[in-house]
Length: 122
Image (cartoon, rainbow, N blue to C red; front, side):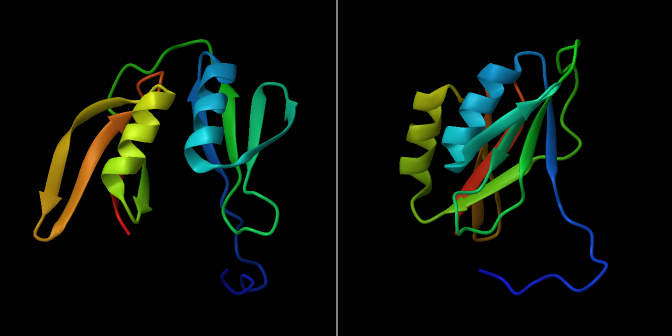
């Protein structure tokens, strides 16, 4: 767990647009091992487990589907990427491809609505 943020520092909240907020929130809650808080229309609210640090994630309902490449995406760094990728695919992710930069390697996936993210080694 990290130290408290300096006075006046912004709080990071991740917001992801989705047409089917229930589907996307269910996926990300399981993917991040977050718990679901009481929703506040048009948001499904995901928060880290009690006692764990991490930004909250809001899944915001929007009327239009994603149509272009994400300009920002999440990277999940884990101890065993292949096992985690299999788990995420089992939750509804789609494997899109592999990438690397020197010794750093990652796998690109998409959530059930096509929002891209990567999984790499911690």
